[in-house]
Structure formats: structure tokens, C-alpha cells
Amino acid sequence: MIGHIESYDADTQTGVIKSEGRFFAFHLDDWMAQVPPDQGDDVNFEVKEENAAHHIDLVGAYLEKPKAVKYKYVAALLALLLGFAGAHRLYLGYYKIALAQLAFTLITQGYGVLWGFIEAVLLFGGQMNKDAKGRPLK
Image (cartoon, rainbow, N blue to C red; front, top):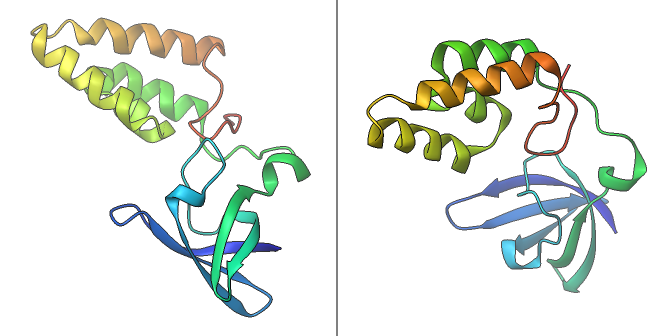
């Protein structure tokens, strides 16, 4: 069946899919895509029980090309100004790398600024051109 995610709670790793006026509960263990689910994502799934879904995968991954949502120049500016804290990575959805950048900056007493500067150059040059969900940058 095809539906869309009505809600998803990352803490409990559970969510609800709406399809044809019905609601189906799911757990992250039934999620097949490489990126975590988000509210509003269109999904293809199988019905496990009367109101439970499994084998859930993103529909948009193969129906249409991903649309750009985030801006390259915003990410590059964040990298220049707040790259030591991983702000540009947070903006792009790479949360673990952002935390790693902040930890690196704290551990090395400020050398994480170089990491942010290098990634700003990569963003301006177009070598970093996708967000965490694989969508191109505007």
C-alpha cells in the first residue's frame, strides 16, 4: 500500500502511517530506507496486522527525483561562521557529524575551526552538494 507518515516519535521509534483513510502503526524495526522517517514522507508498505505496517520504504526514492530543500550558501555561511560547532552539518541533517565536530573542537582547543573552514570551501565549490537525505542543495 502507499501512504504517508502522519507522525513519528524518534524517542519511542514508533509512528503512524495514513493510507486510504486508515491509520497503521509502525516501529523503526520495520523501516527499510537508509534515512530515518519524517512526518509527511510518502511510503510504500505492507499490512502486517489489521492496523500495523511493516516493510516500509520511501516512495519518493524511486518515483521522482529528489527536490532541493536547503540552500548551499546558507550551509557555507554557517560553516564559515559556526563551523567549529558543526552548525552547517546540523542544518544539512548530519547530526552525528555535527556532534563530532563540536567534540573535536573542544578536545583540540579550537582546531575544529579548520574543519569548518575546509567544509565551507567544499560547499562553495560544490563538492558537498547533498543534504543527509540525499537531496541536492539549492
